[in-house]
Length: 180
Image (cartoon, rainbow, N blue to C red; front, side, top):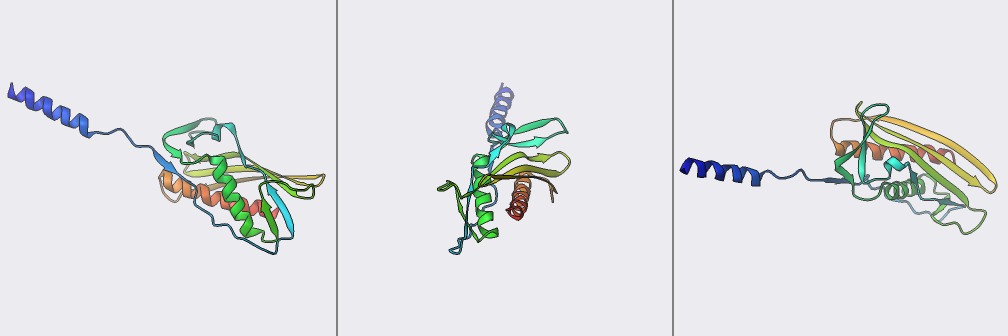
């Protein structure tokens, strides 16, 4: 009888000590904006748009060319589109000091930039994948450009993947800046 009680007690203690996996939350690396008083042109950055499968709290893991899986335990701490908009605004403020950056238009002469992100995920091949399309409206003239990046992960882990996605987004911001 005492063995049964001891075994039951050990089983109960073991069950109590094992905890459910904890959700991990991530933010893209913070980019500090630069402020310039010599701005000549006004550029309005519309909120970055993300593909519907990216419009989730979950990080996206691409298992194959056609299979995408949202992670359950690895989540964005803030909506991805808001992080991408804030980061792009900060990067462009550093890269284009001759532009006054804004998020709302005040005149028809303002340049308007729209960015649509179609890939921003971790791949099972040990890379992160990013792709986006920009639309720049300058008066009645519209220019469009597409960008695509594939960056290798230095090591395994979601934190490393998020850091690498952040570096990829900074590189994409440089490419967008070159087209302005």
